Image 1 (tube, helix red, strand yellow):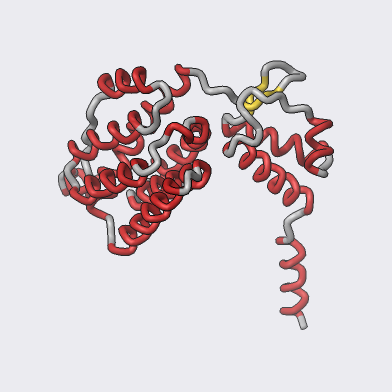
Image 2 (cartoon, one colour):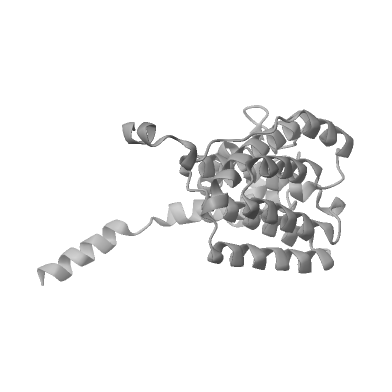
Length: 252
């Protein structure tokens, strides 16, 4: 009898308040709308109109907007004006630099940790990407691109690097959706295949070179500028755990 009462109390204590569920659902809807272009860059967010459209009150909408500001997807121009972020050329350049550094580190560390199950998952993503490219489905391509790179990052076993990548990649997904129409119909899957093959090879310098090739040269927007940025990007080789002397590792 006592056990049943305690279980019932615990179930009550662990129940998520409806307010929290509603704010998170509102956040998901708005985040997806920004990433897929339904809410285009520069769109002004009018709370009253948006709350009516979404069928939610101001409270969960404001909580969702706060989270989107934290993500960098909404920017506050003044106390009364909030807009969907517009990425400038300087923003894009910085995002490319951050992504190149994080992915070089992640993939160099992931290379010796890749297993058959990882490769099977990545192969499947590439196959789906090829189909989406043939169908001209830019949104699907962007989703699969995210899935591919996140899967590779997860292998690296560096939780802080993965967290940083997740935080920054939301803006790169926004960028990718903006340039989706410029992606080659069949090249996008091929470039991911080439990147995966290089990571599987395990050569740190080759991985650094291919990450830069991949990050900077996909898509035709700002092509000339990005070629210049890529040329200036340092080639990075980070030491793996195996490179750290045993004595130093035992001191930690």
